[in-house]
Image (cartoon, rainbow over the protein chains, first blue to last red):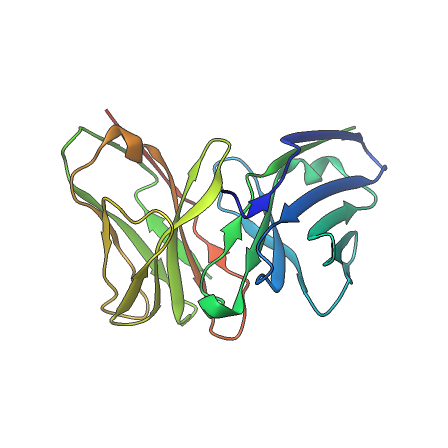
Length: 114
Length: 112
């Protein structure tokens, strides 16, 4: 049973518009959430994270929102750029793993059209 | 700065062969881990280590062995390769104080 779910395998948006990527989780022990970006033939690279004590974290064009009651988080990219085209993975960690293990979603492929 | 280095980048094995995927990091990170990525399933944790001499199993450990004799290196051994182990393998490292893991570029393994 997947503990972290990304239900949209793909998303296409126009350059300059907002991209919203969604992620749901089932394990209430998760208290730290991360987004990774992955280009083909490369490893995932860390993008942004959020602790469960916050409901929003912003870094430039990227903002992550966390709704703990709904066990839902989202990544907003504004404005979207063609270079943002990649696969985005949501990941979560729990304190009982000592932060040494991440549980990943299946990824959403974002395509930003020029 | 190298970060996390994985070798080889590509490998084809015959069923039953054994091999070792190499992983090295130069960031003095305490934690290292191995993930596999399969289509539609994201990354799944195989084994991890919290320091030299200490390893533990992740979500999908069967068919794999690891050891951690130094802080820098964390090799992954396939004992007897099976077609089900065809995947892309990623090594990652992180420090004790942060959950953000740094990943290598991956090893694409095909078992025929």
